[in-house]
Length: 296
Image 1: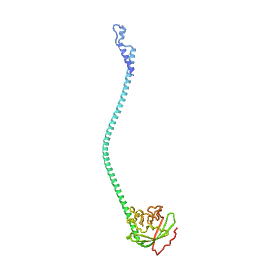
Image 2: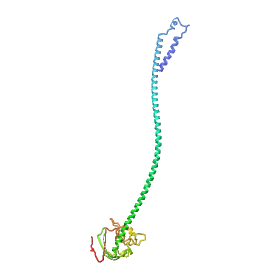
Image 3: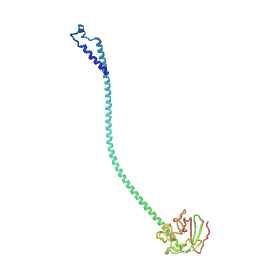
Image 4: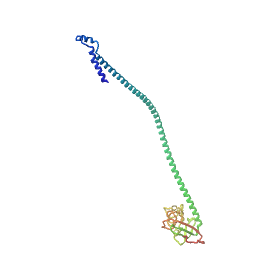
């Protein structure tokens, strides 16, 4: 379009001087008459050029107007976007202020939570320490109660020994885990409490060494250690009172075990590696007698 416009302007500039300016001296009478009027072809050519120039100018104006409208529309969009951005910036600023306030509150809450956590941990430690102390106290009380109860049982057993004082016969029934039941009798003499119920084995039937090595032995309990062991308390180790002789050999007053174990169990022979399965002891005056039979 710009090329057509330039061509028309060039044509006008070339034709117009030739129509206006003429040499008076060299012009003929006909030329002098015609100098006041332009030729028809020239007029048509000029009109055509002007028409094309007008159309080009019109198209240029319309195109420029469209471009201006586009620019105005884009400017409106930019202005609207700018206004929107301004509003968003204001909202962001307000939210930033709220966030700052919230951050301050959260920091304060965080400090409070830290203080609360420290106090809670301190209280938990105190509770755990108190729990440990209570457990120790309970354990100590349980041990004391157990010791007291065991001591009472031992004293009862010692009191029962008073009924056995003098010349008596001990009747024993026992059974091992893999053998039949066996019966034994021992004649013995029991002294009084002033000698800690010292036993004197007088006579044994069928199995003379069951209590033979316990003669002249004092009765031992947890609170009366007479077992001649300087570093051990046989009654405390085995859980019952008996006429102990170096913590070995026979102990028919031990704990009953449900398995073949010798530790703190009922023992009747030195060298045996298991506790007895069954034991029964009874005492009678020497003038009476039991019917001794094989209980197998």
